[in-house]
Amino acid sequence: MTLLEVRNLSVSYGGVAALSGVSVSVPEKGVVAVVGANGAGKSTLLKSIAGVVHTRNGQIVLEGSDIVSLKPHERLDRGLALCPEGRRLFPEMTVFDNIKIGAYRNHNSGQFRQRLDMLYDIFPRIAERRHQVASSLSGGEQQMVAIARALISQPRILMLDEPTLGLAPKMILEVARLVQTVSAEGIAVVMVEQNAKLALRISNYGYVLETGELRLEGASAELMKSDHVVRAYLGG
Ligand code: ATP
View 1: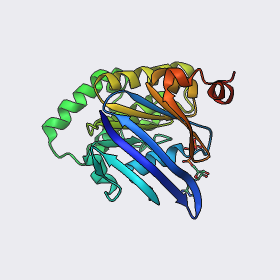
View 2: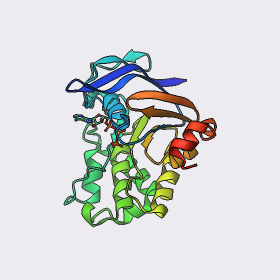
View 3: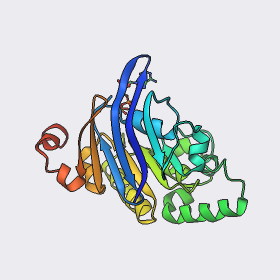
View 4: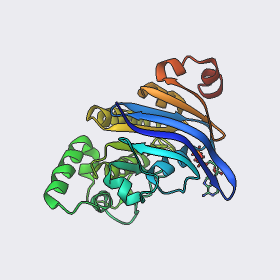
């Protein structure tokens, strides 16, 4: 079943096209990867879905209804959570307070505690460091906090913008494991990555964006065998 469908989406910044006629489908379960080089429009796609950039044309259909006119917080209420590129934590606030920000739409404290305990189970490293300020954590740990902040809202779709950027190889593997854990919980994941190898390895379906247009799409295992993908993104 399709949960979210982006149809023929176009976005431009000051008259310069960043996305042109892009269509992407996100099923209820599984991991969707969007790969592409710097400036291909990957972040713009996620920001459009989250409602933080204005779309010029096209539809964003969640469970049959177009959400293009909804504000970012209304989209969050419908289950769309974005974990932005660069993590965007408040460095001087504690890990706990950073995560709490993600629950700002939910005022049910019982639910919050329950959800938090569940997240601490998934992220034991973060649980241990919950009273530390975010800036004292390693890059990988900060990425975990940013993901936890997105997950505390109990999203149906978790959108990750370059979650492995700048991380050490060991942490990249941890993030990959985490994506699989989140997916196994029944949350759909859309992952935007310059690290095509990793993204295609852990996703079910993939899209290749090039200068704002979709160049290729397909089952990730198939995409990894495509000549173009091998040549342009997998270093072979
Ligand atoms: P990266 O991995 O470098 O973030 P990306 O694939 O996510 O790249 P986007 O950030 O979506 O690409 O950018 C797509 C295009 O839109 C680029 O040419 C970029 O310079 C431009 N762009 C992005 N944000 C803005 C903005 N706020 N104002 C003007 N142009 C922008």
